Length: 438
View 1 (cartoon, rainbow, N blue to C red):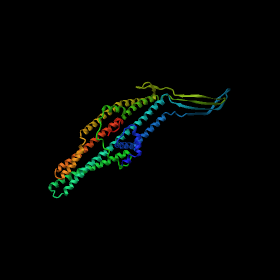
View 2: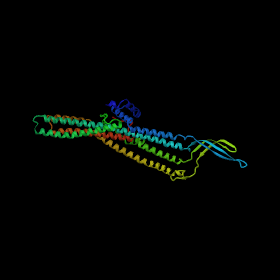
View 3: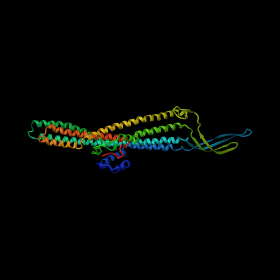
View 4: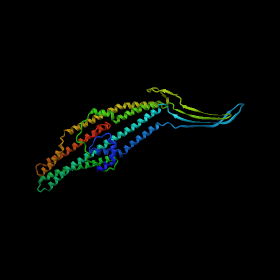
């Protein structure tokens, strides 16, 4: 089943997308997860839409760098030419011009600056979606494994309890005590069977969600053994905050938005400054005399109608007042939102780190062999009950304690992994330089 997921194509894409940033050796489990992430980026249609958005922004950048095409202007018409002694002759006039428009100095560079930031924004949005896609795929893959492992433990208890019920019903002369024990155990099976049904439904729901991210049919098999790590390393808050300050994508987006708004305001301020057109012309008049000749023509607008705009340095054309006020407001809005976003990112990091450390400490308090010993105790309780050494309540308590501890431990590991993934996202994928631990 894993061969179909981590095939040559997926692993090739994986190498291109992730190997450059994380060159350390990884475990087979991590290789499978990275292959799933690479497949999601390759096949997810939303990811491709973000890639095309970059191409569209790059196309606009190319467009704003292009000069207008040359223009040809022609004048042809009749011409009355007056000579001496009241002589009037009907002639013609003609003029041909070839003009090359040029933008006012600074217009193109400012438009390029705005368009370049649009490209950067599109790239950052792709990076943000790629990170969210990676977090979702990793989380779902681990949730599938947790659900399958929990169902396996519940099924183990169900089979053991059913075996004991069959033993009681077949044992001759079990008496009233055996009859009551059988009914108690049969009643406990109802809750286990209900839980197994819920877990199976959850399993298929998670598989369908994961396949949706991978661009596959909903019932396509996926890896079901990618459990969260058993232990988690300590994490420094200062390091997280420093990484988020440099690499958090939302902060990067807002920095670019501030810069873009600033460039847009400058571009708006000179948007109506007169452009220039330059080129040769040739003209001819045929009347009493024939006059013709070439020349150079320059067309430029007149800087009239300029007015002071409150809050804007310098002057601008009067019909740009509204656009300039809008551009200035957008710049101030972007600058005002940045510290709010920064505080939100820092508070989210603090909250998720607190949850991570609390869960990590919970797991650290648990003896490494506790689950294995509870599992052995549950199996031992069955043997002891069959020979009459313990009663039915102690048998059920052994089964329930094993199942409860197993589920609680899995839930804690999944909570820690979820907090880890959240911190990974909040730091722009730079949560750790060595990738995901084992």
